[in-house]
Image 1 (cartoon, rainbow, N blue to C red):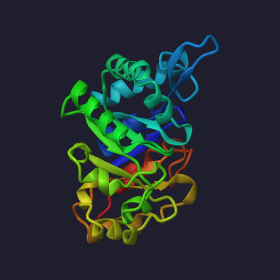
Image 2: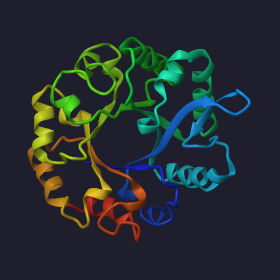
Image 3: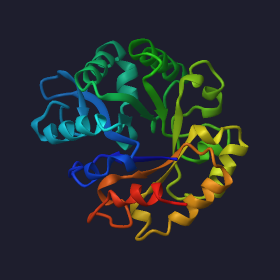
Image 4: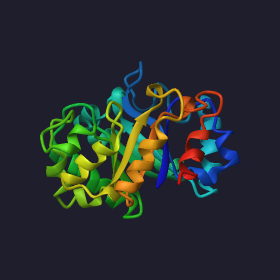
Amino acid sequence: MKTVYYYQTFEGLDKLMTHPEDVDIIIVSSIHFGKDGNGTPNIYLNDNLPSDDKFTTLWKETEELSKKNVTITCMMGGAGLAYRVLFDNFDTYYPLLVQMIQTYSWISGIDLDIEEEVDLDNVKMLIDKLNQDFGSDFIISMAPVSSSLENDGVGMGNFSYKTLYNTEQGKRINWFNCQAYNSFSSDTLSKIVANGYPADKIIIGMESAQFTGDEYLPEIRKMKETHPDINGVYDWEYFDAPPECQKDPSEWCKLIKNLN
């Protein structure tokens, strides 16, 4: 079972670096696009250019962790959006994304968190381009809410994930980082599997703020028992991961790796 952290509040990964064997993936969040005050098109990591000095420690620590067999990916979109701007100006903004991934070459995948209405054909085109430019070893994940996998209706992106999943591009999606923030349970996982998504395609996600201790562990144990081939679990986000929260967020992955 993979352990995965989303990482957006960049307060340092020093505690995690003492036991990197307990974490599998760190997803640096989040990428979006826009123009600066002079009208110059840019790619942004949250509110700043990825090359901003404020990210020096971020890039240093993630590169070091990548050398310790931790997979580093980046998330694009989310609440900060990204896709309308990208698709409306693809020839302008997509090369900036490629350049960023090439600059920070230890980034080995991208997580597509689409929370705005898009054309499914554009999503398929993006998956094709990523596969073409970075190869089949480059990880492409997506981050739908759990209800979008429990049923086949349209979600926040105004498209059906099942429709996408059943295309050639859907076969290139390595897994889904499923947002189960109000439904983090074995029952939710079972509903998703019953709807045709194999458990090994699902990394099911919890939100730090909804837990004050280790009460999530029995549910994860049940997930492993019910679906032993589950791909993994993730937490949004690292800096306040339970049970130690801001004291030691790295404890979350250690407890899960030691779960019997």
